Image (cartoon, rainbow, N blue to C red; front, side):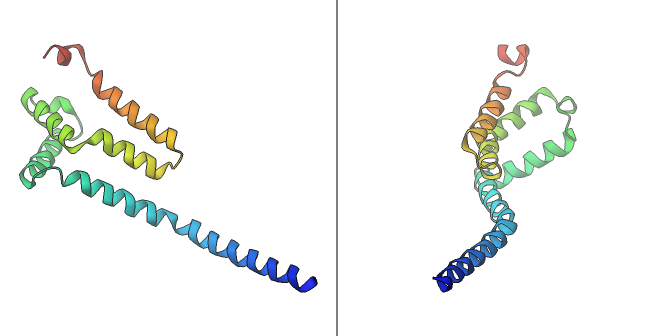
Length: 123
């Protein structure tokens, strides 16, 4: 009986070591999954569209007010084609594995794009 306890404890200790090793490396798996998901979304854009997207983002330097109305609309169309809301939800579900939280992030991102400004709603 004493030998069985030692065997069970040994198996438990080895399993604990392996799970600790895996837990310390799960970020690599999550990063790879985010990279694969992001690549899938980027491939929705043609190479010319990707170049234009980066040109517009560089020009704006993070401030939409630095773009003309036409450029803002063009960037918005490229973002829609990219599926940025779906991408945000996918990344959130990967990084935050609790499924309802990922859904909340995706919902919030979609809601934010629906309620932009009154002048955009008229156009």
